[in-house]
Length: 369
Ligand SMILES: Cc1cc2nc3c(=O)[nH]c(=O)nc-3n(C[C@H](O)[C@H](O)[C@H](O)COP(=O)(O)OP(=O)(O)OC[C@H]3O[C@@H](n4cnc5c(N)ncnc54)[C@H](O)[C@@H]3O)c2cc1C
Image (cartoon, rainbow, N blue to C red; front, side, top):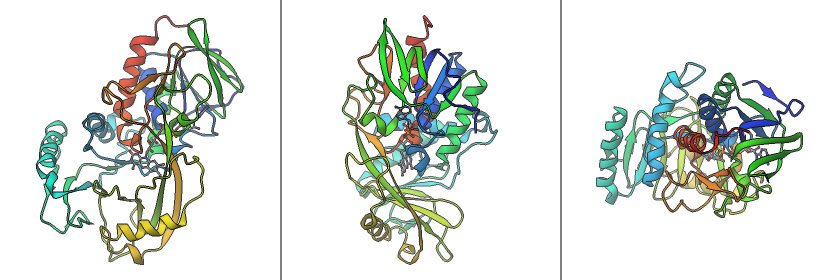
């Protein structure tokens, strides 16, 4: 856990205030602090990663159907694999493999994607077709892009590591400090919190699902909505085999190992405008078990241990693609909102953080306040 502060010693000035200490805010704060900015991170919760990040399955892979997201996911996977990028000295990636199941008609596109991934990462991605199963996952009539070098990370652990690095580079991380509004103070932002006001050169809002009902001054131009995400952890006992992470593009169903004898399962739960703390939906738990049995035949006999329901921010893909649309203005000068991640913010966070920091550093650090 990085050095966390409360409200009492809140600074009055910063180059950049990052609102939100989820995985996105932590990535941005780390990258900005590395570039020499004086960064203050604020989170209303008592600890970092208490939002979507703390509930997330953390599945990471290079492949995505959306080329703009794939362009973020591929270098992000490289970062998650590289021990030199982490304060802990250990790469956070659990490389259990990733299986993307798709309609057989997508074979040629998946083969091209595998070749691109292997060129960039020196990995062994490949397409499995005409087989019943790959890496412990039944393919249910689909074909599979298998990325043996992908897998999952623990998002809270990644968040902590980045905040630790940011603090080592001079950042301050204040938890239990809620931002109430961001105002235009003579052309530069004033961040009004319940512990005082910070005058900043720029503000990056990385409030995740809270972007759907933002505080004054943090509304992104695009309409953002919350959507429920519900996952369950089940016991996986022999003879149930170990397996890779997987997602079926035809249905949106997914699973990942969550330890040596546990598996996380999920499928789309399209409940819009869902509160971040809504209670689990028992009917969806049963529907998820039944649906996932096509991929994990041992599932109906497995014990369900826990169910977690949370939400992420959803918005249409930015018009110019993810590369141009990572940040949106809010109407207050030098205040930007990070794009909604539509349920996939972990697999893109390292590269998104780097690009956002580049954009903010280029446009906002001079003159400092
Ligand atoms: C159950 C679940 C499973 C998922 N699985 C995957 C997966 O396998 N792979 C993947 O890539 N993605 C996955 N996702 C999506 C991914 O976790 C999210 O996209 C990502 O965590 C979003 O991070 P964030 O930092 O943008 O938001 P959050 O983690 O929600 O952080 C926002 C922070 O802002 C703070 N905040 C809000 N308002 C204020 C305010 N006014 N003042 C101060 N602080 C404020 C909150 O306290 C919170 O800590 C999953 C999500 C869920 C919920």
